[in-house]
Structures are given as structure tokens and as C-alpha cells.
Length: 466
Image (cartoon, rainbow, N blue to C red; front, side, top):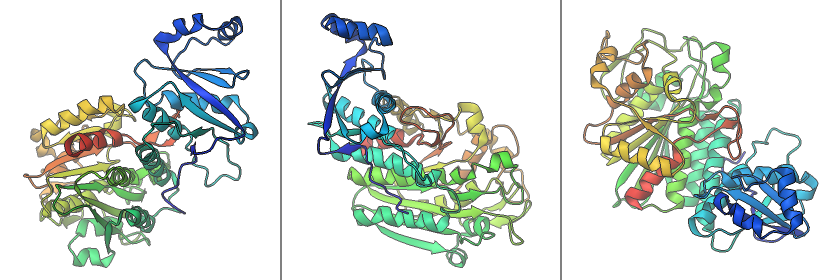
């Protein structure tokens, strides 16, 4: 299946029926209402329309929909509007209707289109019947390329994470990266299976060797070699049984999403390349499946890492940090000025911050503070957490040099300290421990795969290199 679907949210041609969607800011509602005929004010009272963000008032006599939006427009205001419109009209009717946003300009107009586009996402590849979504005519003045990049990058992330593991293994993650690379003329190299040992990636090989779907390191490069070098590293565990430290079924059922870090870096790489940021981009994804077999790695095994330190495996369900260790070492060897990794790494990050807010760690406090600050404006919150060095005692208490799991409360910090051990001290490094899953479903954020921390980091990169 294609991993980069074109969104069907937008059109360049009006349909048989064309309806204008007029943005109405909340504080302007009273003035607007005073100017309306009695029939409209009565309809407002009847349905309780007060210009609230995301609420709509449909005037079919004039083929106009009034849409309440926040005074400072939010990305998901028009996701709510799109959902409301989709619930008002039947699927058959929507086939013949196009909509067009009026009353917004500039960045607000772009935001409205992005929110609408996200609301039109549906993971329906495994559905025999699909639901019609409202189609939006491109408004004059909208930045189509940027809107499509934001919508389709998130849609791709969602598709990758939502796809069940029987259809998305390490080889499919490789195919997705190659599909991403082709239109951007990026290059891709892959080190696979036994070659991982020959090329000195022992931890990646060890974690993935029990699966019939061979482990690999996927390496994509793009951009001018003279531009600043940045490297993205994504945890690509296509499915995580927990290994011999087997997960209980209630924790294993969603482990198709354990490649959510890889999906985030693929989406971020697409945003960077689509917007042509002046950077020399590298994308590294260690892609494995953590399976159970006679040759699976065991609790208590001690393995030498690419960087050199010996790692005692105290928990086969702490496999993500092992594959990232080799990948981060490899990333650092090229001496980039910035390394960013994403990983669905710890339950303790979710216990502390919930599903929507990734825990952010960095060896550069200024970068961490900047990303957190920019995340507010990007409507994509992240929260900087401490790389508390005194806690190193918990991961250095080992027969080897390090343990991969301390087995104590606060694992999000111990895992970040573990990863830091494999990053060159002179390289700025950012680590995001994300959930990549929407638990309940909201407008523009359906239940299932979710981007968390994607827009925050891209906003930072635009600010730094744009």
C-alpha cells in the first residue's frame, strides 16, 4: 500500500452546490447578530448558536454557513467546523457539495485549511464502506504547499502507526522511507540482518534477531552538504511483544504503535524537505521486531554496544533504548550540530504527563526551553524534563557498564540518561518520549495514531534555520 496518500480534503473546482463558510469570531457575535433578520436570530435561539468556536449555523436559503472561531484562531477550530458540517449533511449530499472559507486571511486562513484537512483523515483501508467527508475549495491567498505538507505529513504518520503489524514490519518501514525519499531526490542506504554485525551495530541486531523479519538500520540523506547538519533518529519497533519479559495482553495489544518514533521522524523529514529548510538532513531509523524465539536475547545478557560500553540487559521490554543507542552513536560519528530522536519509550512519561504531552530532554537547556516555548504557539505542547545526572547511579549499578532498565520509578529520566551516554558530548541532542496515540478521539484528532511533538520541533527548526 502507498504510505504517502494524497488528502482528499481539498478541491480546485466548485461542485454542483457551493456553500460559503463564513468565519465568525466569538467577540464579534453580538454585533453580527444585531444585523441579522428575524429569521436568523430566531434560528440562533432555536439551536443555541452564540458564535462559540467550532459551532455552526446553516443558512440554506443563502447557502451560507456561519462558523464560530476563537478570537485568536486555533488550528483545530476548523477541524470542529468540518466535523459539524459532516454531521449536518448526509454522505450522498456531500458528494455534490463544495465548501469555501470566507472571512480569514494570511496565517489564519492557512490554519483553517490545515484543521479542515486533519478532520478529513480516516484510516479506512480495511473498511468495506467509507464515509464521505466535506470537500473544501482552496481559498484565494492560502499557502497550498505548506497546508498540504502539514496535512499529509500528519496523515502519513497516522497511517504508519495505525497499520497493523502484519502489514507493517521493518521491511515496510524501509519501503516508506524510500517512498519519502524518491520525490525529494534523497538517498537511502540500508544495513540489514547479519550485515549489522559486520558493520558493528550489535544492539540493533540483538533486539531484532528473533523475528523472521530481519532487523535493519535505514539511513536517508538529503540537502546541500554545505548546510548545517541535523540528524533525526526514530525508534522503529514494528511490534513489541516485550521479548522474553513478555508483555501482558492488555499492554501488548497496541504495540503496533511502538514504531511511533520512526513515524514522527518520517513526518518531520517530510516537513523539512517540503519546506526546503537549508539543512543537510539525515534520517536514521533502526527498524526491528521484538519477538520471542529460541534465539531471542535474554534478561541478564551483556552486550557490547557500537560505542564500546557493555550493556547489561535487565529487561527485554526495554529494547527501544538499545536500538537507539547504536543509532545515536552512529549519528554522532558524523558530527552533526543537532540530533533529535523520537521514541515511544516509557510508561512513566505517560504517567507523569499524560498521552498528549511528550517528555522532552536535552543536553542543551537553551534548546529545550526554546522548543517548549515555541510549542505553545504551535498548539503542540511539550514539557522539558531534567537530565538529572545524580540518577546515573541507578543505571551504572551493573555487572557491565550500564543497565538498560533500572526497574525503579522515574524510568523516563533513567532512559534519557541511558541514551545520553551514546551521544557525543559536543553535539546538541534532543529526545522526545512520546505516546503517538489519541485515546478518545476529538475533531481533527481521531482515535488512534496521533502526532505529539511533531509541530513543536518543526516550528523550532523553522525558527532556527528558516
